[in-house]
Every structure is written in C-alpha cells, then in structure tokens.
Length: 454
Image (cartoon, rainbow, N blue to C red; front, top):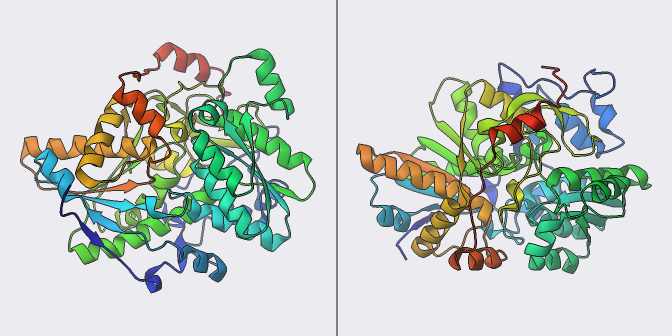
C-alpha cells in the first residue's frame, strides 16, 4: 500500500453543463438511419422509444454545452465530485518514471460511473410523465445504477440481464432486486426476440445485443413505457462527461497535464466520459493528448471490426448506427468483463477512431486480471473486470515509459470496483480462467452479412 495522493473538489465544482463533443467535430458522425428507408432519423422519430429530451440530445450537433437540470445536479452531490488519485503505489510497483493518475468513479452508491446517465435518463422520463422503463445490462453495473435511479423518481423498471452474467454475478442481480427492479435473464421467453433466439440456440448464454432487443421490444409494447440505454448512444456519452470535466480541474490542482488518457471500452460510456472534455482541446489544436480505448481481445470491434452501418441489437429493432462493428449477431465469449461484451461502438467514437483522433488496444482476459491484482495490492482498490482492461493498458504504457526512460503523465478512468465480482477473481486465482481470441474467419463471417451502406 502506498502514499497515493487524492485531489478533491467541492460540490460547487460539479459541472453545470454536459459537454457535447459533436458540436466541435469537423467530421461529424454519419447520421443514424431508418433501416427500411435508409433516410436519416430526426429527433421526433425516436420519441416512441426514448424520452423526448434525450432524443433531442441524441440528435444535437450544434450546442457544445447542454445544461444539467438542477434536480439531476442535486442528486449528483450524493457522491460527486469523485476523487482523482495519484497512484504512487502502482508507480512504485512498476518502477516507472511515469506519473499515473486515476479518476475513481467506484465511489458512487452503486460502485460505478453508470449512475451519471441513469439519474439523467430517469429524470427526463419522470418529467415527461412516463411510469415504466426498460433496459438491458451486461455485468450489471448499468442495471444497478438505473434500478436506483428509477426508485429515486418512482418509476417501474424491468432489466434484461445477459444470461451468463445473471448466473456469474448473482449479487449484482440482487442489488437490482433490492432497489425494486424486475430482473430477467436474457434471452428469455418473455419476448418474441428472446423466444426466437432460444429456439434457434437453446444453450445460448446471451449478449448485450440480445438483451437490448428484448428491452426495446418490451418498451414498444407497453403503455407509457420508455427504453433507457447504458452506453453506445450520444446522449449517454454526453451525460458521462461530468467525469472528464471534473478531472480537468483536478489535474490543474495536481499541477500536471495528461499525455495519455485511457479507459476500458464496451460501448463507450466511460471512455467518452473521461476523454471528450480533454479531447475538445485537441480538436481546437491546443493540446496533443493521446487517447487509448482498451477493449477485450475476445470482442475486438475497434481493433478488428469493420466501419459500417449496423443494428445496435441482435434482433434488428434499433435504427442503423454507423459504427465499428463485429456484426450484430456476433456471439462474444463468456468473459467475466460482461460490460465489454458488445458487438459495436457508438457513432461518435467510431468517427473519432476513423479520423485517427484516438486509438485502441485489445487486452487478453488474463492480462487484465494480472493488472487488476497488481493495482489492488498497490492501491487497495479491487477493480471491476471491465476497469481492469484500462489498468492493463496503463501498465503497458508505464512499462514502455520505463524502457524508454520517458516521464509521461498517464490518466485512466477507474469506472467501477470489483467487490461484487469476486467469483471472477476466485476463478482467476484458481487458474480456471483462459484467454479467448476471435478468428479472422469468425469476424468475416459476421461482418460479411452486413449491408454495405458505407
């Protein structure tokens, strides 16, 4: 354990507006489109599925700053601002000249960054008079966050939890139930999409794409019900920018500025949250920060996917999104980082990657857990398997600095703690985990099915 240093802000430092990076992008993301007509969607086209205000946020390409409602900001004060920490213990363990910082989002009531958007989406649904909401969840962080947010605003919530995580992570499922949500293992027999998948693949353990299909179907068939999403789409990334906006002030307090910013990557919520506020200075030509997304080797959409229009879900209920994708029917391996088992990336991230404004690395499962153990022993925090991918990428960079004799400032997002993921650690420590690598043939088999719109 180390003398790691915290940099703390006051309540008055919680951002008053979210940052919308699309307004500052020269090459704006291609529009999401109607699968039938191939025409770009307007905000009102999303009203049947999402709350009206988040639909407008989704389509907003002109306003760089969108005000955070006072009621949302007041609830943020329960745990925000979150600490920025200089990880001196990890630096010492790695014997690196690099200075390593992490933004600790694990201090939220649900143990992850997901509450930043959950509260906002629940607020907009309640304000519109919605009574019921649905969602999907992979590892359960988003489901837990939305369960609490729904209870805060008196909404009824149904969560479709990816089946492998439903069984791997019973305590996170119990958290959702404790907050009052109904939790269903996906694929399930409660929707047409679920029944079709179970019929075709009886032993299928699910994916985020499958769970999204079921949640969307339930929302569209239930009166006064809306669907809420935990990652991928622009409005979710928008809400998460409170992370990076706080981190900017805290890096000033530390008297340093990051050379590299790193976050794990599933659909993009925590990466965009810490990266976009800093990236605006790169876009303005004032800085030259490198941004690195760390995804699992078993689900490598950024490093090995294709840039094409694809559905956000497995059944094809969503609009078509321009994304780096492995194909919407890609079946990811049953790794413990359930929140990263998603086939595609959001449209903003995809455009930024295409334009080389950021880069990506893929991390084997065993390397992620090895880095997690190092971090836990050096800093005292047991990280979520998802966040461990960011730690592994940071370790790579810190060791490179050691080899090259460079003193760089590295900042990563600790998106959540792993105290409810101890079965995963138990399996790792027992030697029961393995790496999964996707073959080129499997990727090509899935992506070749996509309609070549781009």
